[in-house]
Length: 243
Image (cartoon, rainbow, N blue to C red; front, side):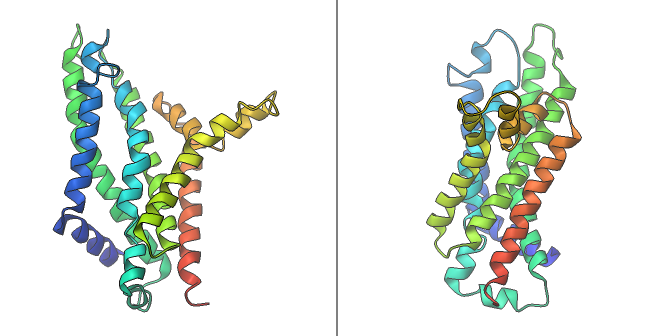
């Protein structure tokens, strides 16, 4: 797994892919946090990091599929997937290595946003008047959300040899699992506690819970289970080449 991880990380940073991904994310988040008038912290009445944690998932919906679309689709298109699967590594090690490499790249993109926290920390009328515990809990929720999106993205990439198709499929699946259940729960056919049950199938429900700084084991289990399901599906998708 370590060899696959190193190979993918080197591929990201030996080309422009890694730098472009990190740059685009930081530029978009910088514009939203400090420039766009409807979202800018500078135009608000209080110092808050809410903008970051509400907008980052929407950016991830497109950014993470762009990162993961090449993981298996490029290997299949170039014909190197056969060489990869015949090496003395298991399918789980291949998938795990690629998953960790993509997630690491996303975490690298998030790290500079700590500067936003430091800036907002000093902007308040009373410097330091922030719920730091809640903010770090939100960061943890954002990393778990990124892990779920990455697992979905590499699954989509394993289904096709076309990177554009992999990107569109991953973006659709991420959007559906993130937001669709919230809209479905509002249909009149769901009433009582069934609407909450439907919402609980979606990522947004659990991410919003963690964004309040509360690390509930149910939310952690949800994200870990969702990531594991899509990683297992990716392993099965690779295994079908041997069937």
